[in-house]
Length: 289
Image (tube, one colour):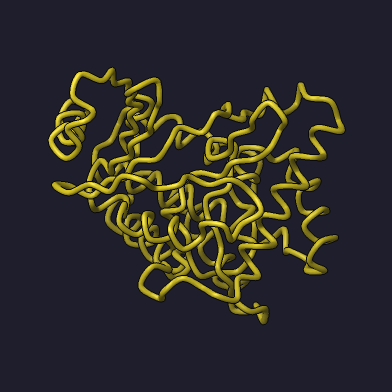
């Protein structure tokens, strides 16, 4: 799916957008367009390919969670007819970044972390869970198998292969010792999926990767991208829920996911992102983790 085709599809499905201005906001993992009509703005989201993102699943999950979470989420009002995609009124908020967050007063930082931990508590304690077909199984085991298979087929990077095999073995040992219950997890928590408005109220985007898994899966992206903030978020989450989250599991999950992402890009010859994705892996290897 290309942005121009996405634009044409929206107009064909919803003629009221004919003559509207369109702006491409994102087109790496999905295509996100902003369309304006009658002084209103709407966000439309398409998958680049059906294989890498299940738009229909996200639509159903957003519907399921409407009015059930303590944060704002997109309110679906358009659903594609020709292709899987959806649209929702633009949320008047700004993208939260690490730089923006760290420049905020401590009280505001605390307020945002409180909202994130409350959101996770609500997600993990869901009694009325979504239908089973909407919940992805914990992907870590499949990712581990993917990593080992790639190492077997591509033995030319010996250091990377040894590191990958060691991480997979460590994760499998850790997972075998787990006795806690798997829960419904959001599974994609990082600043790129968070918005804040002028009053620092939180909006959470991208529900397409929700899964059944251990709660540590909702912290592994922070370990990868916002590690200094991880301990503060874990502290608040533990205070709210009374549950300790194993930092070892977070670290190993972060590495398993990153290795799987790197090898998947490598396998599919997506070379434009390889260096950026490999950078944290090389850092871990250098540090001997």
